[in-house]
Amino acid sequence: MDHLHLLFLTICISALSPGQPMDPGEQEELCRNFTVGRELTHTFYSPAFPRNYPRGIKCSKIITAEYGYFVQIDFRDLFRIEPASNEGMCEYDYLEIRDGDQGYSTEIGTFCGSDFPPIITSSGRSLWLRFESDGTIEYQGFKAVYEFIPNPMEKLPLISKCEFELGGPMGYLGHANISEEHAEYASKYGEPVDCTWIITADPGSQIFIQFREFELSMPNDCNYNYIQLFDKDTDEDGEIITFCGSVAESKTTESNILYVRYFAEDRGQGSEFAAWFSVLTKKEDDDGPCEDEDDHYDCDDTFCVDNSLVCNGIRNCKFGWDEESCASGGGGGIPLDITKTENIVIILLLLAIMIGMCSGMIYNLIRKLSEDKEDVLASREKSLASLAASAISINHSQMTKSRSRMTLEEEEGRNGCYVPPPPEGGFPFNSRP
Image 1 (spheres, rainbow, N blue to C red):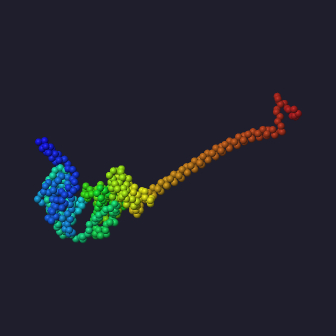
Image 2 (tube, rainbow, N blue to C red; image 1 turned 60 degrees about the vertical axis):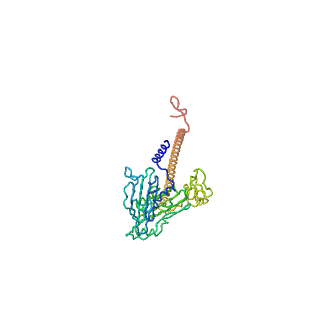
Image 3 (tube, rainbow, N blue to C red; image 1 turned 120 degrees about the vertical axis):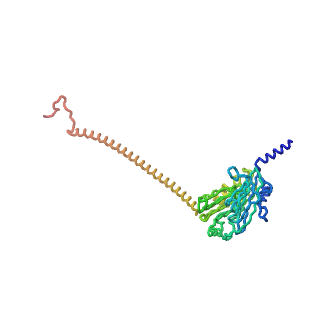
């Protein structure tokens, strides 16, 4: 009896607790009903159909028709997915469908509950689908049939998809990769340029991307041109950032797959951008050496890069240490393009600041010299005035003494000698009246 109680408790806990992350191999096998289905009959199902779909699963697929055809999906017999939330949102288990071949294509709808979706037809050649369940309740799922129907309005010539697959320890991507055929096609038929670069590294690696050049035709207008970065998946869960301004900063993925998308409507075409990507290998121990020291360079952080990237003129490490000790002494780094408008503006601003600083220093120096000169002149005038006053005082004293001597001499020189008057009057001796 105790064993039965224990088993019942275990089942209840398992049913109520959130599901653990599913093993990738097991998930791939369970998704086959959805991703592959029955190709001969153009039928696909929810994962594990006809059993309940499993908890915590995520499956995606792309259905693409031949040139000149649309894709049309019809849900039949059964459609039962966990109902929407109280707010009416399909947040728990749901089927998402987008009009295109990527997770960033225009959303057609997200479906859940027991109401059959309408018949869905693509506007182009592809539909992108994703089924996802949370970690709690399971339902029966669904069955769907798709077919390819002719597009009677198809008049545009067939052109290859603008897509590039890149690999290796480092690589370049940019507007120079877009062929003249795609540019002329977009210009002639009023179609947007929509190109994707798929960069794949070894499992466990991460990808570091840095932009050397970034100049959109319509900056700050995401309706006409932008660049998107996606980590591992091109859906909203994988989006890292969207650049549509005048600056694009460096980014690092969490996974070993990076998607770079460039989109430009007619008014936004002609943008120029260029970027370098580098593959980073994370150390097992953040403070330890690289796992393979003979083939890898230690970036002096938590990553290593391939030895072939050292002193190649590009800062492949996040902090650029792979270029700091190079014999060329240039310090490495992405070369500066002085023909770019923003670089010219920066250089002019720096020159203006330097000229302003020099002008200020010269002005202060001249003002200081002028003030010092005035102080010297004032001090000299004061000294001269003091000397003049002293000279006048000395001359006056000398003149006074001289005048006293001359007066005495003049008195003595009147009769040749000086005879004092007789006492009590009378005439002097031997004098006549």
